[in-house]
Amino acid sequence: MRPAFPPRRGRRHHLHVPRPGSRPPLTGSGARPIRLSDLILALLGVTLLGALALVLAAGLASRALAP
Image (cartoon, rainbow, N blue to C red; front, top):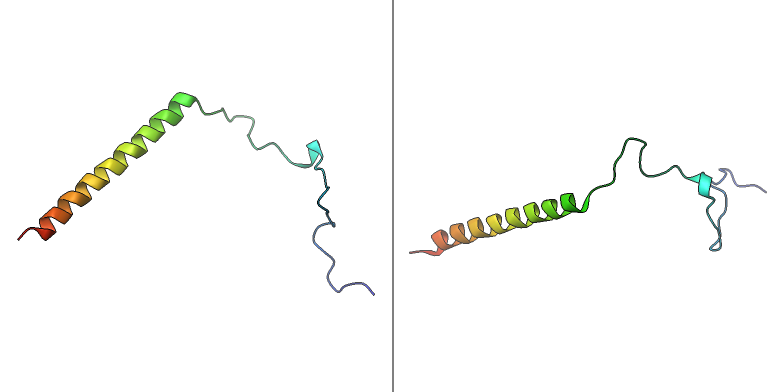
């Protein structure tokens, strides 16, 4: 007796080895790799924004607690 709905994918086991051509490449043809300097600048920007948010939060909290 067969199931009413066939499985969407074929059965796989833990030893399944994917074939190189089975998956499209992750990067597009026009995509360039990200440079390390861009990553460092992005991290610096996020850090500075976080520090600014902490300073503003501390300023607001000190005003709220002041008599």
